[in-house]
Length: 182
Image 1 (spheres, rainbow, N blue to C red):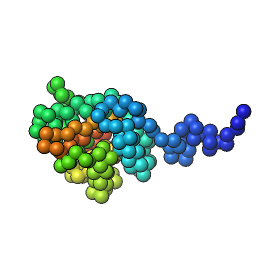
Image 2: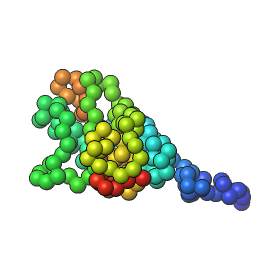
Image 3: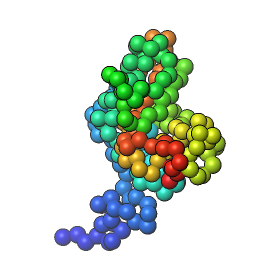
Image 4: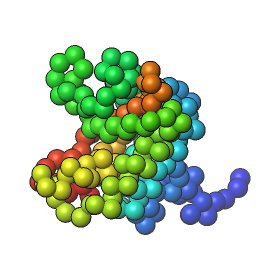
């Protein structure tokens, strides 16, 4: 029998040590979307670095959310002329998830590029509660780090003109006015 030190034991079980997560969240081989496992992992890792910086728990990848995001990305690319728009809250395309959307002019953009774009809004974020005045410029970033969000899934589609749409869905959703993201 091989004995492990306490830090090794904690690391082996992915437990929390001093508020920081020991052990990474892994994306399953079947991501739930057209996004390859490595690309999904890179985007998830970026989300979780941003969350660690503000003290929120890491997100887990959800293949179910990724499938949901993929359907919307496909719809935007095929049926909506590659126009960026959020899902409605009701109707056949309705959603109760949080959502970030990215559009790029070339198919070479990755899910990590999308997450980097959303994270870039941190430059405009002033810690505190969300209001109608501060939400618009930072809503993608605040959804990434929202304290109660536990899962993310992403999908991507290439538009007929070669552009790319990347959709991220989050559960539970964030961005509640009058609340602080973390």
